[in-house]
Amino acid sequence: MAFRYPDGRKFEPKRNEMTKKSVNKDARFSNRGMTLEEDINETNEYYLAHQVAVIHKKPTPLQIVNVHYPSRSAAVVTEAYFQKPSTTDYNGVYKGRHIDFEAKETKNKLSFPFKNFHDHQVEHMKRVLDQGGIAFAILRFSYTDEVFLLEATHLIRFYEERDHTRKSMKKKDIEHFGYLIPLGFHPRIDYLKIVDKLITGS
Amino acid sequence: MAFRYPDGRKFEPKRNEMTKKSVNKDARFSNRGMTLEEDINETNEYYLAHQVAVIHKKPTPLQIVNVHYPSRSAAVVTEAYFQKPSTTDYNGVYKGRHIDFEAKETKNKLSFPFKNFHDHQVEHMKRVLDQGGIAFAILRFSYTDEVFLLEATHLIRFYEERDHTRKSMKKKDIEHFGYLIPLGFHPRIDYLKIVDKLITGS
Image (cartoon, rainbow over all chains, first blue to last red; front, side):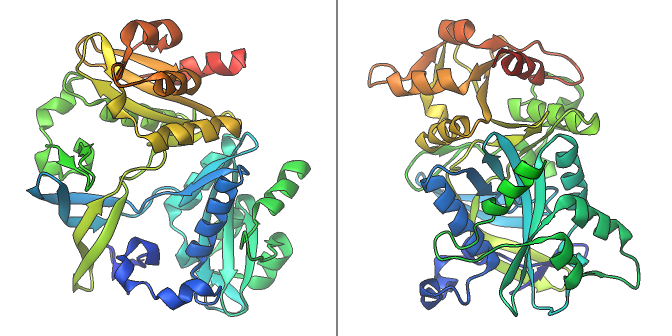
């Protein structure tokens, strides 16, 4: 399912935000078919449970227009609209450092489309860097199930260099400037191992 | 307007999350009648515009059950339910430090009710402190329009000492252990001035 914002941009609702009924339960028992978001959420739950870090996904921003109040015990939102996020989706704190990132995946084999990112999100990453936070993107190539951490400095540069003919980042640039995150079972995407390198190197 | 979660707890929808139509426009031109959330949001916008800090309110978490897709250009959420937040409402980064806080107000004159806080939020604050983040509550006594910053260490202690007879914090304890935030026009609630003291003292 995919919807569009009023300006025509696509919105892909995240599976775990939809009702449980729409989730394919069989998919839970294997890593295949997991969305990147589910893998990141599971990783963050692992970090939280093991007191490694406190990192959460922000809720999807909605403009609430009507709320129905059928009984004392519950309220139902009956009209709301998706809003474009003005920040990254994930943030939190790790070893005293502010962590801020966006996670995106593509089915492309050799490039990562810029359309996955909004101007506001890239602007937000710049601001986080200016304040001394750690900002990056987690990028999955779903065809090969490779997951990269790309520091915001590089993402911002690629984003600003894009033009009408160049609407994506080359995979080889992501391989060169980013870090391949080794995938595991628990946690699935141990991106803080890479963040440790960034902290040590900074 | 106030609604209840399925477990019977109250949810107070924030004014700026409702449709613009429900906002009393006259209230915008004076500080009186502004909710604490509006004042904090305005303060955070000031910080953002002046490159002082990057701090945002998290969207209200909603469980989306049904989305109607009337045309190519828009999607309407037609059924969603309020979820209890598992973190604080505000977070971000300031001078390299992770900032995490909750903002609440009361009409009481001499005490601040604990019912404004959830177990999960207090637990979240503990975790943020363990990771070296800066966590606190901003508490407004609306009758006198006094706003205090109370560090999470004190809030957690008060919260854990509560019992059946003691369901609130005493205002004099908040005055003693917290910091009165001087109110201004722009920004309205300059809480980072107090955070500066906490950073210097830590």
